[in-house]
Image 1 (cartoon, rainbow, N blue to C red):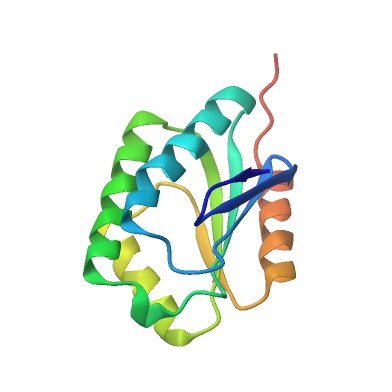
Image 2: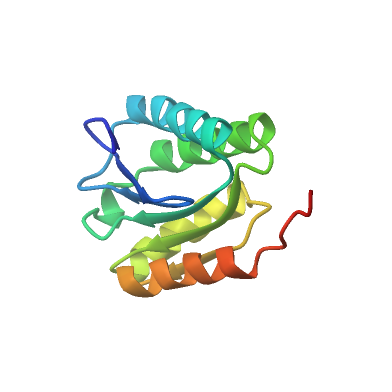
Length: 138
């Protein structure tokens, strides 16, 4: 487990990584979180990420959060190409899914993404993505 006050990162299913947000993260938490995920991917290999944000409230995700998240994603993609192979989001409301659409519009990822209302469905999708990934032959 990798944890800070805002993000809990569960690596027990590696390369599927579950990131849980129990509340809206502070703006100052984004850069250290992305740095930790980058370090994890560089140390252990590419990730299939599931972000469980069901406990957050979309209205708390301000324009500052959206811009910062988009900026951090852009930086992450540049600094760590190939570190994420697929990414799922578990969101409880249509408003939250709309906020995510806004962030993804500002910083579209090069990997497949999907939103879910159910954590088991998101985890299953991530495992399926892993199973379908091309295997590198030595």
